[in-house]
Length: 110
Length: 111
Image (cartoon, rainbow over all chains, first blue to last red; front, top):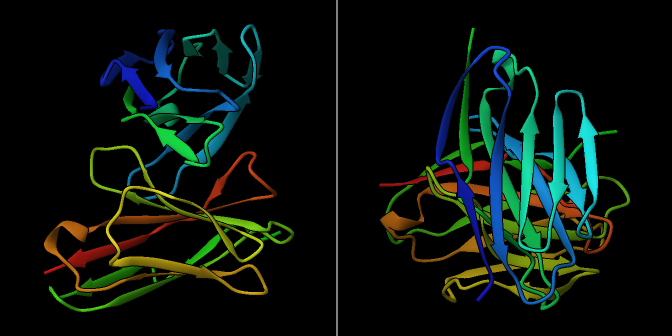
Protein backbone atom coordinates (compact mmCIF):
# COMPACT_ATOMS: atom_id res chain seq x y z
CA UNK A 1 0.00 0.00 0.00
CA UNK A 2 1.29 3.46 -0.90
CA UNK A 3 2.32 5.49 2.13
CA UNK A 4 3.62 8.97 2.83
CA UNK A 5 5.08 10.06 6.15
CA UNK A 6 6.31 13.50 7.13
CA UNK A 7 8.63 14.67 9.86
CA UNK A 8 8.74 16.45 12.11
CA UNK A 9 5.05 16.67 13.00
CA UNK A 10 5.57 20.24 14.17
CA UNK A 11 8.50 22.63 13.95
CA UNK A 12 9.05 25.93 15.65
CA UNK A 13 11.74 28.23 14.24
CA UNK A 14 13.00 31.69 15.00
CA UNK A 15 12.83 34.14 12.10
CA UNK A 16 15.94 33.61 9.97
CA UNK A 17 16.65 30.11 11.34
CA UNK A 18 16.90 27.77 8.32
CA UNK A 19 15.68 24.16 8.49
CA UNK A 20 14.37 21.24 6.45
CA UNK A 21 11.14 19.26 6.37
CA UNK A 22 11.17 15.60 5.39
CA UNK A 23 8.72 13.57 3.30
CA UNK A 24 9.32 9.82 3.04
CA UNK A 25 7.29 7.76 0.63
CA UNK A 26 6.59 4.19 -0.37
CA UNK A 27 4.81 4.00 -3.70
CA UNK A 28 4.44 1.36 -6.39
CA UNK A 29 5.35 3.65 -9.24
CA UNK A 30 6.00 7.33 -8.66
CA UNK A 31 4.55 9.65 -11.28
CA UNK A 32 5.22 12.79 -9.30
CA UNK A 33 5.79 14.21 -5.82
CA UNK A 34 4.02 17.41 -4.85
CA UNK A 35 4.49 19.97 -2.09
CA UNK A 36 1.63 22.17 -0.90
CA UNK A 37 1.27 24.86 1.73
CA UNK A 38 -1.97 25.03 3.71
CA UNK A 39 -3.14 27.84 5.97
CA UNK A 40 -5.73 27.03 8.67
CA UNK A 41 -9.22 26.47 7.26
CA UNK A 42 -8.10 26.98 3.65
CA UNK A 43 -7.36 24.76 0.69
CA UNK A 44 -3.79 23.62 -0.05
CA UNK A 45 -1.74 26.01 -2.18
CA UNK A 46 0.52 24.40 -4.79
CA UNK A 47 4.28 24.91 -4.35
CA UNK A 48 6.30 22.35 -6.35
CA UNK A 49 6.13 19.23 -8.49
CA UNK A 50 9.14 16.87 -8.68
CA UNK A 51 9.24 13.95 -11.10
CA UNK A 52 12.59 12.19 -10.81
CA UNK A 53 15.38 11.58 -8.31
CA UNK A 54 17.93 14.36 -8.31
CA UNK A 55 15.45 17.02 -9.36
CA UNK A 56 15.38 20.32 -7.45
CA UNK A 57 12.96 23.26 -7.58
CA UNK A 58 13.20 26.67 -5.88
CA UNK A 59 10.77 29.45 -5.09
CA UNK A 60 11.75 32.39 -2.92
CA UNK A 61 12.91 30.96 0.43
CA UNK A 62 11.84 27.40 -0.41
CA UNK A 63 13.76 24.65 -2.17
CA UNK A 64 12.45 21.14 -2.78
CA UNK A 65 14.63 18.12 -3.56
CA UNK A 66 13.81 14.51 -4.43
CA UNK A 67 15.56 11.16 -3.95
CA UNK A 68 14.24 7.66 -4.64
CA UNK A 69 12.77 7.37 -1.16
CA UNK A 70 12.25 10.87 0.19
CA UNK A 71 11.90 14.54 -0.51
CA UNK A 72 13.09 17.53 1.47
CA UNK A 73 11.65 21.00 1.66
CA UNK A 74 14.41 23.37 2.69
CA UNK A 75 13.41 26.72 4.16
CA UNK A 76 16.12 29.38 4.13
CA UNK A 77 15.88 32.38 6.47
CA UNK A 78 12.15 31.89 7.11
CA UNK A 79 9.80 34.74 7.95
CA UNK A 80 6.66 34.66 10.14
CA UNK A 81 4.50 34.61 7.00
CA UNK A 82 5.99 31.19 6.15
CA UNK A 83 4.07 29.75 9.11
CA UNK A 84 1.65 27.12 7.75
CA UNK A 85 1.21 23.40 7.40
CA UNK A 86 3.31 21.92 4.61
CA UNK A 87 1.85 18.88 2.89
CA UNK A 88 3.60 16.35 0.71
CA UNK A 89 1.71 14.12 -1.75
CA UNK A 90 2.60 11.41 -4.26
CA UNK A 91 0.84 10.43 -7.46
CA UNK A 92 1.14 6.74 -8.27
CA UNK A 93 0.50 4.71 -11.41
CA UNK A 94 -2.65 2.97 -10.29
CA UNK A 95 -5.36 5.59 -10.55
CA UNK A 96 -5.56 6.09 -6.82
CA UNK A 97 -4.70 9.71 -7.29
CA UNK A 98 -2.81 11.70 -4.71
CA UNK A 99 -1.77 10.13 -1.43
CA UNK A 100 -1.03 12.83 1.12
CA UNK A 101 1.16 12.78 4.18
CA UNK A 102 -0.12 14.15 7.49
CA UNK A 103 1.79 17.41 7.09
CA UNK A 104 4.36 19.38 9.08
CA UNK A 105 3.03 22.30 11.05
CA UNK A 106 5.62 25.11 10.84
CA UNK A 107 5.64 28.11 13.14
CA UNK A 108 8.13 30.92 12.54
CA UNK A 109 8.46 33.30 15.45
CA UNK A 110 9.52 36.94 14.98
CA UNK B 1 -8.38 33.79 -14.20
CA UNK B 2 -10.51 32.44 -11.40
CA UNK B 3 -9.18 29.51 -9.45
CA UNK B 4 -11.17 26.51 -8.29
CA UNK B 5 -14.41 27.60 -6.63
CA UNK B 6 -16.51 25.61 -4.18
CA UNK B 7 -19.93 26.13 -2.65
CA UNK B 8 -21.13 26.45 -0.03
CA UNK B 9 -18.24 27.55 2.20
CA UNK B 10 -19.86 26.22 5.35
CA UNK B 11 -22.67 23.78 5.97
CA UNK B 12 -24.32 22.38 9.08
CA UNK B 13 -26.39 19.19 8.81
CA UNK B 14 -27.82 16.63 11.21
CA UNK B 15 -27.19 12.91 11.23
CA UNK B 16 -29.07 11.00 8.56
CA UNK B 17 -29.44 13.96 6.22
CA UNK B 18 -28.10 14.27 2.69
CA UNK B 19 -25.65 16.90 1.44
CA UNK B 20 -24.51 18.12 -2.00
CA UNK B 21 -21.26 20.00 -2.44
CA UNK B 22 -20.35 21.81 -5.64
CA UNK B 23 -17.12 22.59 -7.43
CA UNK B 24 -16.14 24.59 -10.52
CA UNK B 25 -12.68 23.83 -11.92
CA UNK B 26 -10.15 26.23 -13.36
CA UNK B 27 -11.11 27.16 -16.92
CA UNK B 28 -9.70 24.59 -19.33
CA UNK B 29 -9.21 21.89 -16.69
CA UNK B 30 -11.06 18.68 -17.46
CA UNK B 31 -10.26 16.67 -14.34
CA UNK B 32 -11.82 17.18 -10.91
CA UNK B 33 -10.90 15.33 -7.73
CA UNK B 34 -12.54 15.32 -4.32
CA UNK B 35 -10.80 14.93 -0.96
CA UNK B 36 -11.88 14.76 2.67
CA UNK B 37 -9.65 16.40 5.26
CA UNK B 38 -10.23 15.75 8.92
CA UNK B 39 -8.67 18.22 11.36
CA UNK B 40 -4.99 17.54 11.89
CA UNK B 41 -4.65 15.10 8.99
CA UNK B 42 -3.72 15.28 5.33
CA UNK B 43 -6.44 15.20 2.65
CA UNK B 44 -7.80 11.76 1.80
CA UNK B 45 -8.77 10.93 -1.78
CA UNK B 46 -12.47 10.26 -2.46
CA UNK B 47 -13.02 10.47 -6.25
CA UNK B 48 -11.46 11.60 -9.48
CA UNK B 49 -13.43 12.44 -12.64
CA UNK B 50 -12.02 13.12 -16.07
CA UNK B 51 -14.16 14.02 -19.06
CA UNK B 52 -17.28 13.10 -17.03
CA UNK B 53 -16.05 9.57 -16.36
CA UNK B 54 -15.00 8.25 -12.96
CA UNK B 55 -11.28 7.59 -13.14
CA UNK B 56 -10.51 6.71 -9.53
CA UNK B 57 -12.23 6.00 -6.25
CA UNK B 58 -10.77 6.02 -2.75
CA UNK B 59 -11.71 3.88 0.22
CA UNK B 60 -15.02 5.51 1.08
CA UNK B 61 -18.45 3.89 1.59
CA UNK B 62 -21.17 3.89 -1.07
CA UNK B 63 -22.88 6.74 0.77
CA UNK B 64 -20.41 8.94 -1.10
CA UNK B 65 -21.07 9.58 -4.79
CA UNK B 66 -20.07 12.19 -7.33
CA UNK B 67 -20.58 13.24 -10.90
CA UNK B 68 -19.09 15.62 -13.43
CA UNK B 69 -21.14 17.73 -15.79
CA UNK B 70 -20.50 18.65 -19.46
CA UNK B 71 -19.03 22.00 -18.35
CA UNK B 72 -16.59 20.01 -16.13
CA UNK B 73 -18.10 21.25 -12.86
CA UNK B 74 -18.73 18.56 -10.29
CA UNK B 75 -20.94 17.58 -7.39
CA UNK B 76 -20.13 15.43 -4.38
CA UNK B 77 -23.12 13.83 -2.68
CA UNK B 78 -23.10 12.23 0.74
CA UNK B 79 -26.15 10.30 1.99
CA UNK B 80 -27.12 9.25 5.51
CA UNK B 81 -24.64 11.62 7.16
CA UNK B 82 -22.69 10.41 10.17
CA UNK B 83 -20.93 12.47 12.82
CA UNK B 84 -17.64 11.21 11.40
CA UNK B 85 -18.38 12.87 8.06
CA UNK B 86 -17.64 16.25 9.62
CA UNK B 87 -14.60 17.54 7.76
CA UNK B 88 -13.24 20.00 5.21
CA UNK B 89 -14.16 18.77 1.73
CA UNK B 90 -11.70 19.85 -0.92
CA UNK B 91 -12.06 19.93 -4.65
CA UNK B 92 -9.04 20.03 -6.94
CA UNK B 93 -8.78 20.47 -10.70
CA UNK B 94 -6.06 19.56 -13.16
CA UNK B 95 -5.49 19.50 -16.91
CA UNK B 96 -5.14 15.73 -16.88
CA UNK B 97 -3.43 13.71 -14.17
CA UNK B 98 -0.76 16.27 -13.43
CA UNK B 99 -0.54 18.95 -10.75
CA UNK B 100 -3.80 19.48 -8.89
CA UNK B 101 -4.97 22.93 -7.83
CA UNK B 102 -7.24 23.10 -4.83
CA UNK B 103 -10.27 25.19 -4.02
CA UNK B 104 -10.93 26.80 -0.63
CA UNK B 105 -13.01 23.85 0.57
CA UNK B 106 -16.42 23.35 2.13
CA UNK B 107 -16.52 22.96 5.90
CA UNK B 108 -19.21 20.37 6.75
CA UNK B 109 -20.38 19.99 10.32
CA UNK B 110 -22.69 17.08 11.17
CA UNK B 111 -24.60 17.39 14.46
